[in-house]
View 1 (cartoon, one colour):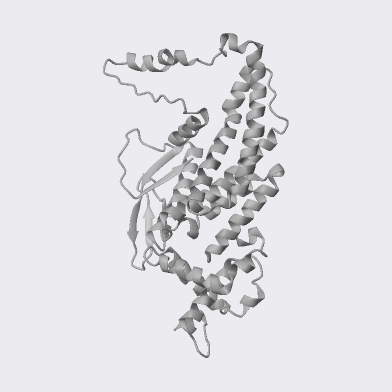
View 2: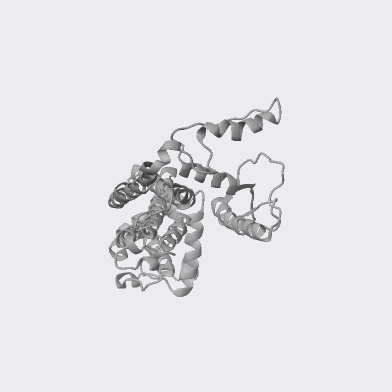
Length: 378
C-alpha cells in the first residue's frame, strides 16, 4: 500500500525512512530552488510526492494529530541537518515551505538582516507582505503549537514589519521637520507624524512578547530602532515645535479650530447630557492615553466586523465553514482551524467587495455572537 501510494521501496523499509522521505519530498515540493544534492536521494517519485504533500498537509492541519507532526518533523530536521542547507537559499525561495520549523527561523533571520541592511532604502511593503504570509502559516498559527509560542512567533514577524514601516517613515523625512506655523505642524502630526510614536510602541510591544519566549533575535534591531526614535525623531520634533513655542504660542496656547482641554465638557459631554434627563455619559480620562493609541483604537472600533461562523464536519472528514449573514460565503479545510482560517479570507474579500459596491453591510440591531467567530478589519 505504501509503495502504491507514495512509491516508497527499500530493501529493508522502515517507518523512520518513510517519514524522512515524506518530509524531504514535501520540503522539495514547495522549495523554489534546487534541493541540496545530499538530499536528492531521499526524494520520492513524482507521483508519490503529490500524495506525500497532501498527506502531510492533512497531518499538520489536524487538531488532534498536529502535535505529533511538529515533534517528528523537528526530530527529522535535526537528523537531516536542515539548518545547514537553509543559509544557502534565498529568502524568497523559502516562502511557501511549511515542512520544518527551521525554515521559519531562517526566514526570520533573513528578514531581520534585510531590515537592518536596507533600512535607508527599505521596501516596507514587501517586508509586511512576507510577514503576513508567514503569520498565517502552520508554525505560527496552528493550534498544535502552544499558545505562548504562537503569540511569540507572530510577534517576531509583526515587530520586523513594523520596524520596516518605521524606517520607511524616517526615510520620507530624512531632512527633519519644517513647517510654516504651529497649525501646519499640528495637522501634520494628526495625519502622519503620530505614526513614529505608534510604530515605535508597536515594535517594542512585539519585541517584548517575542523575547519572553526566547525569540531574542530582535535585540540588535531594537538598538537601531531605539537610536532612531530617541536620538533622531524626538530631537527633530522638539526642535521644530520649540520654534513655535518660543515665538509666542505659549502666550495664548491656542490653535485655531482646535478645542482646548478646558472646552471638552461643553463641546462633547454637555450636548449628550442635554438630550435626556436619563442620559449618562462615560468619559475615559488618562494622561497616558496618547493620540496614536486613540487613533489605533478608533480605527479598530470603526473597521472591525465580527460574524458568527457555522462549522460542520463532512462525511469525508473535512470541515465546512460558512457565515449565514453573508450568503454564498463559505470555505473548507482539513481541520476546524484550517476551515476557519480559510473562511476568514473569504469573509475579508466578501466584505471588501460589499463596501466597494456601496452595499449595506450590517443591520442597525446589534446581536450577541457566540464562538466560533470570524473577525476582520477593513
